[in-house]
Amino acid sequence: MTRNNPQIVLRRRPSGRPVADDFEFVVNQVPELEDGQVCVEVGHLGIDAFIRTTLEEESFHQGAQIGGVIPALGVGRVVESRFDGLEPGDHVFGPLCSQTYAVMPGAMLRKIDVSRVSPTAWLGALGLTTGLTAYVGMTRVAKVKTDDVVVVSAAAGAVGSMAGQIARLLGASKVIGIAGGPTKCEFLVKELGYHAAIDYRNDDVESRLRELAPQGIDVFFDNVGGDVLDAVLLNIKEGTRVVICGAISQYDDMSNVRGPRNYLKLAERHAVMAGFAVFHFTDAYDEGEARLADWFVDGSLVMPEHVEVGVERFPAALDILMSGGHTGKLLVKVSSD
Image 1: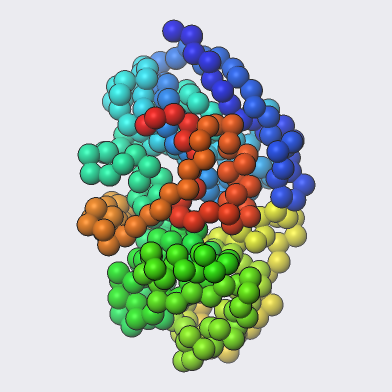
Image 2: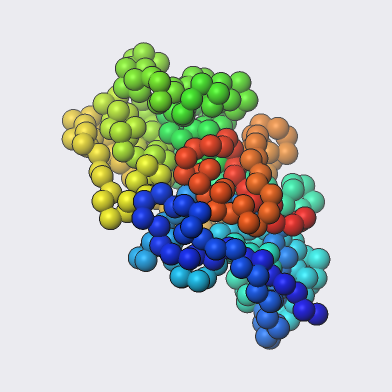
């Protein structure tokens, strides 16, 4: 059976913030399967910050090639299989990329259980780059404990949304979110259960933190870097754990990443700063997925979704991500899961 495969490919490498002309919409044909391969109809793609880094010629993550599809994690259904262990109709998760059909080795895909949660939950609340990342960061790196004062940056984004809620469920006495604009700050408090929120666009982050946490903070879960990180470092106390999950403020110019000016506060306060990537904690996956699923199903965790419809919306969705124009998990719906 011949299938057309609408795709978004990289036309040129961005200079600064990606623009529409950096990408191209093309339609290719789905190739015939070889032994060990499957064909997946892509349902939804997760729009994650790591995607921006793959557009660089040298990337920590697997890089996009000129004329090639863009790396992205997604969920979908198997429509054809020559791989033992996956059959047509199975729901799967994997690196499906910016296209409508993905042909790849079946060993690169994970069959997912959608009996308790929707397929998109495997990109959001339970997702490797979202819920599971937040869980590992809070439990294994920050080691949040009862009565901790926790601060999260990019708190209205996908990972930040989960990180603050997880900290609360782990017993933190106060969870403070940093986000851009009054609408997002209201969202943090009223919908996600954050105790307080700081609008970095209109508030002085350093002084507001001093008001909200006069004794200093115990944990900072950072997704932003730059000026926000510097402001928070002025409010740490003895033994604070600063966790570097990401630095989206730096991704548009990876050749000129700016580190914190106030890092000496770590020495003054006998504090620590630790970076992490979720794939270093594979031993936590089963535990994390089980707890996240239980919390999600019973309503203790919520994960709002911002959905753009159509694979052709992939570049626009990436722009929404980089400009902070969403709350919760940002997704592109390619077809029905």
